[in-house]
Image 1 (tube, rainbow, N blue to C red):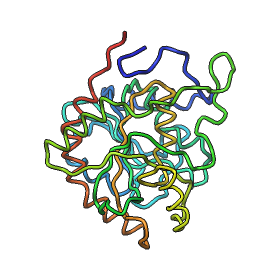
Image 2 (tube, rainbow, N blue to C red; image 1 turned 120 degrees about the vertical axis):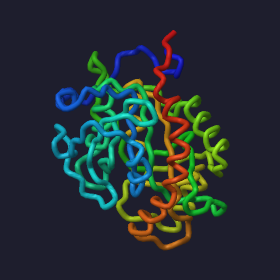
Image 3 (cartoon, rainbow, N blue to C red; image 1 turned 90 degrees about the horizontal axis):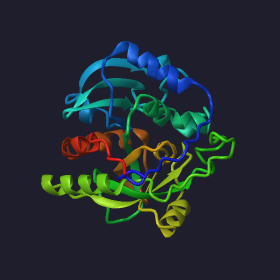
Length: 288
């Protein structure tokens, strides 16, 4: 058992050598050995671009198994470098289930991160607020999630003995990292929420009945990503911090362009929180 609550149990895998080949490709292009992987969601890439000292950049299309980027606001590039004194792998964009590549593709980022030796993942996203008291541009720290995508990201994964990937995900989001992010927000004078994120398959936005149902189930925000990455990361023994940016509040009509604009506006707050939190995330958890 580690200090973060992960275990030394054998880790599951869907098979295939794409992560290993991807990690080898990255190692050929840079001496950076990342401790933290960060995924920058819709419109959030600009928030950290200036602070990241990039040593190497790899398009998603060059990474084994990765499809090229197809979603506006997702550059589809992996940058290796140093962020706030920590060696990081920064994914500018992600693979979404709604892009049609299958649920396995949504776990490519955490699988590659684990193969590169990363021990912590920071996942960011744009989301819709389900609580009328939320405001556009507000950040929400994720303390739990609802998987409403209709498929499990560990579908087809196996443990080394051939058994299905029966893994405990009761503590996907690391409590210590959540507290560090909350404290960072307080120190910076940023009003953040802490809540439950619901993931749906997309790409259409939710109907009023769907938003009402998700809120009644206990969700505070809804989006189309993050959960597959978080579950896969937890299954691989990585610590996870999740941060959502509220780009709209339930009951309003929405376009993707408005999502990107709202997320971009929240960039300074995200930057302020991560400037204080990434150094904490970069500290490798002690093992018992």
